[in-house]
Amino acid sequence: MRRAAALLCAALLLSGGCSPTSEPDPSASPSPLGDDPLRDRQWGLDLLDPERTAWPVTRGEGVTVAVVDSGVDADHPDLAGRVDAGIDLVEPGTPPDDQYGHGTHVAGIIGAEPGNDVGVAGLAPDVRILPVRVLDADGRGTFARTARGIAWAVDHGADVLTLSLTLAKDDRRVRSAVGRAVDRGVVVVAAAGNRSCPPGGVNQTVYPAAYPGVVGVGGVDDTGAVASFSSCGPWVDLLAPGLGIISIVPPQSRRPECRDADGSCLLSGTSEAVPFVAAAAALRLAQLGDSADGRRVATDLVESAADVDPSGPDLRSGHGLLDLEALLDR
Image 1 (cartoon, rainbow, N blue to C red):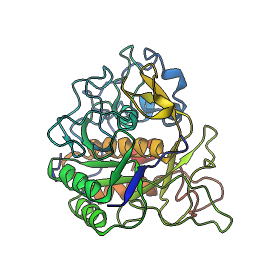
Image 2: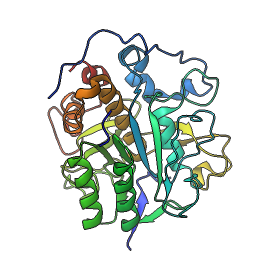
Image 3: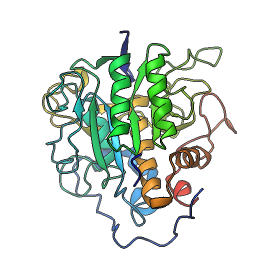
């Protein structure tokens, strides 16, 4: 695979090459989904149906997904052994442990081990997770730290960048770091924001989702309709499950909704939609192998999306809902 101080906040609701093979990869055998105690609450995974649409072909092996967030609990049994060393830019020199809880929640959506009698199942369970801690124990960070985190991830082998955060405004440092990532062939996926659609139909611009080359992700509810919290604007490229998403959290989580949680937490927002799309990007990269190109994958994600009401691309739903089967059939 390729190697290619204003505050920000985690974007949470309150609270080309050769054609892909159509033959299953015998090394990518599906795992049972019924053994995870929280699996029956993962409506988003049901919607994407990876056991049928993806895992007979790939589970994301060989791909590194950077979670630029509040850190990741590398010892969580649903992630243990598949989390790389990463970096902590909040407390330099220490492991990027997750005190807030959000980064682990995101990582679980991406890569939690299915069928292991623990927690949840991730969409791309064979990826490597690269934790980059830029948000502190209260879920806050700075532009400079975010830019450094993005640059570090790109320089340390990230194939996909998961940015479940929004900026208070455009920032040249983050813009430059994102542009470099895109130029290096990294797939950059970011939250479209949770500001709801105003009467005029367009929210204030949300960054980094609005930067060129970034895949901006809005959220849907469990009926497949655009979630009421999801922002509207030209930076919304597609949608993914975002309402009431269950995933894992560390025991020391300080996020209010997850504090004292028993290893899991239910969160809503475009932050939760982003990791579904990041995981789908990883599956597509793994499927393409050495011919993989980040720009192509970003285009594939958008162009394969399933149109939703209203018909055609629009500022609320982008090109539609993430369609894993159509993505891997391209």
